Length: 194
Image 1 (cartoon, rainbow, N blue to C red):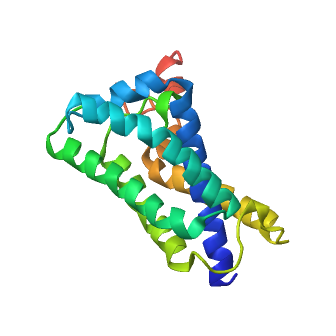
Image 2 (tube, rainbow, N blue to C red):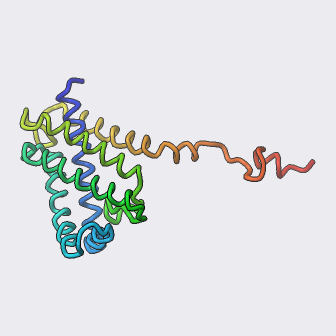
Image 3 (cartoon, one colour):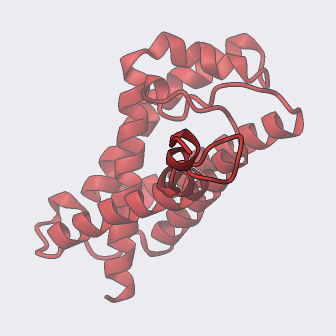
């Protein structure tokens, strides 16, 4: 796989992230606007205005990343939007505040955490990588290129692997066999008659 193919995979993955994010926020835009204000970084009027602007911007970014349309303009905007999110999460973590992330609107109920910041930094790295090659050959789902279907498959695999890796501790806990909390023996040994 050459660099352009990898860039297309990352571009489509980012398009998927922006699409899910915009769709989640569109399900309950008022709740998202309140969520932006909940961070208490900007005055409420500005927080609501920023929130109202973010939803269509993310939808346009999804369109640009998925189709390749206006990617030369959208790529730096995507990096900037993700950096704004990273700054908001960093400020929230430094203030030691417990707030909902609102990253995907009402689609998730995750709290702001170090994992949120790592996710954003990985997205910033991916968006920067796409930006470094933006304006090259036509890319995206609408390009008519034959490698779009495998790239879309790889993009989905990349997103799923990223989610699993960022939640590795939770996955490991699920895969461990159940143990009795009061002893080191499995529950069958504790409950069995002597």
